[in-house]
Amino acid sequence: MLKKLSEKFLEQDDNKSQNLTADLIGLSFKEIDSLLNVNLEQRELILSELEKNKEIDFYKFKERGCFIDKNGFSALAEKKYINRNHDIYLNWLRNFVQLFIPVASLIIAYVALSMNIAKNKKENSEEIKNLENRIEQLENPINETKK
Image (cartoon, rainbow, N blue to C red; front, side, top):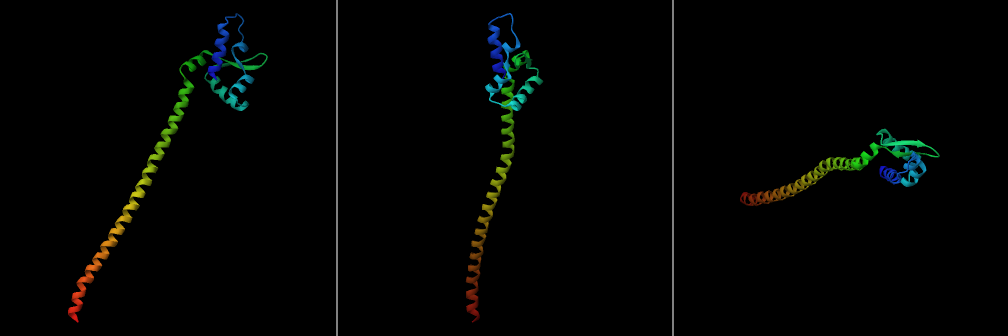
């Protein structure tokens, strides 16, 4: 939004005409709506943030609209909103990773523990069978001598 407003401002500023009016250096609300493909509520949300930071000023001549202010040029040069958007993505990613890693670790630990328990159960079962066979082998000669 700021980029389009700055382009419009600079386009008219290059003409160096003495009678620069706000409607010549700015965009009407209709132009903004079609440019951004937004409805009234979305436009007002976008413009309210820019107005709050004193990056745009509003005008009303034939139509209502807005033009970029010096703070708007500064925000555009500093890539303020692009950096803010990157920060939002990075924060979302960091939150996701902070949640995903412990959950994944818990699932892996559960699977490993379950596999270990199953393995130990099988080994214990085999050992019990071996011991039962040995006991039986030891009892057979004892039982034969008793007869």
